[in-house]
Amino acid sequence: MPDWQPYREPLRTTLTRTIGIAIVAAAFVALSSGGLRRWPSLVAVMLWPAFGGHWVDLLFLNWLRPRLPDTRIVQRIARLAIWFVGGVLIGIGVRVTAAVVLPRASMAWLTWPVAGIAFIAVELAAHAVLQFRGRPSFYNGRG
Image (cartoon, rainbow, N blue to C red):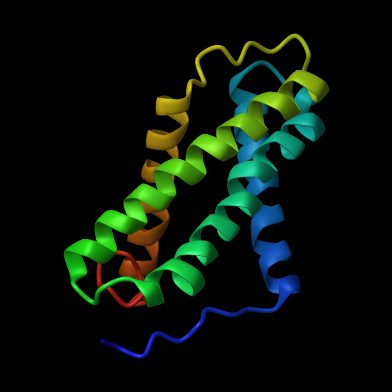
């Protein structure tokens, strides 16, 4: 079994990256849905998948992964499962936050299966970028 090293990065780095992601994603959604008027509220909603997603991945990397067998298939299935459950929980946070800051927005489409699958898709895309850059990722088994 490999000696998994805990993933660590300064909180400032995490906040810079995740807030930046939330700002850009919120701007994209605001522009594609009719205007920047809702942009600040959308930033609050987008912090759930951006900042919350970071903590979901840390849960896998620092807590679950060292406790699992070293088999790559087991590691991958467990990570996908954590991403799905994390996506469902993040989806709940998104719906509650949206109900407060965007009361007229309909979030009926964001069901628990959609949230879980969407979060997996986002994580796979993010890890594809890491893989392309030669960094540890889901695809190479190092991240």
